[in-house]
Length: 440
Image 1 (cartoon, rainbow, N blue to C red):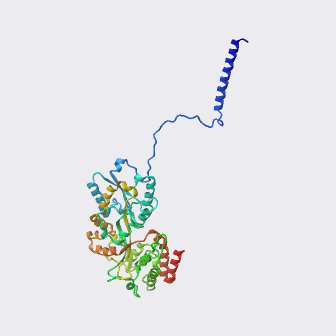
Image 2 (cartoon, rainbow, N blue to C red):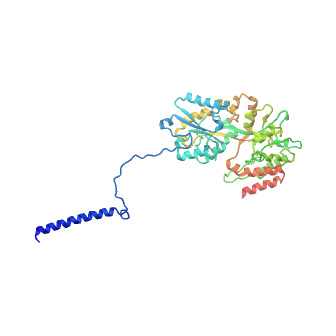
């Protein structure tokens, strides 16, 4: 075999090997259990797209330039400026006055349920985590929901924020209900206090002290004995100097104040001032109806119930007290700022000033039938007879205790009240039972 033939054979052999190897590579590529790692490909740069978070309801995220010109205000339905009432019209006019004076700003009102799913607190909490851009600049909350929001860190402190409220003239309850753990997280906006109502044609001089009222010839006073928060015994207990301890993690009751408060209920039941059928009353609406239907001579109700109707044949006054110093309890609403409001706080403060302005508050609180938060507001009321009584009630009112207290002792106080009215047990036994339950 010559050299030329050898070179030809080597070329043919090499060609066969190339063809064979190419076939094997194609075969391997078609076997999935071998081809586990895909061949790397060159990355193609793309723009990152982040979906804009939104909440259910009418809240939407606005462009940045629109956000800077708009103030969102959350309100409970009771303060809806579009419900057609006299109070709502005054509220609406005040908002319009604000936008007229600040042409570069628009107020966006959102009505939120006060509690429950989709309510103020839930919406505030959800938006704070998922969609801070839809949070309001400021909002008006009920006292109990405000406390929850403050404890959850959803609201900013207002200790350094100035308003046109004269804090020196605030009623005690109004000042107290804005504080949580020693810090002020809101401004008081409106209130509602417990009072006594009666028919002047039947009563010339209503009693001012419990000892004066609870006598053998006592007339019936209606109150909701089965009310779940135990408001009546709670009021009696606090009016007698009872507190709940400095440690918020443990509720501590004063034994003497507790016994004396239950003793008043027991003594009242024994002279039929508090008849046993009051245990069927669970709401203050029932107390109010009992008076109007002449089933009772007196009724313990909220001032808002009386102010909503202003019946000609019924008068309002302070509840009796243990001594010459009147005492009552109050609830209410506050104006607060979410934590995110700090970024645009200067603009939000402008609107807050309008909503807390005394002249507006005078017109609006009288039309809305709510208790003002300050003495400086009442002189503007047209009904001077009512405003004079409210001044006394406001000065004697203290805020309902914190939520944890009402939650812990409300049911216990309610059960003790029922026991006193049924005269099933002594006030000492009921008092001891409450103290034992709280200590366990």
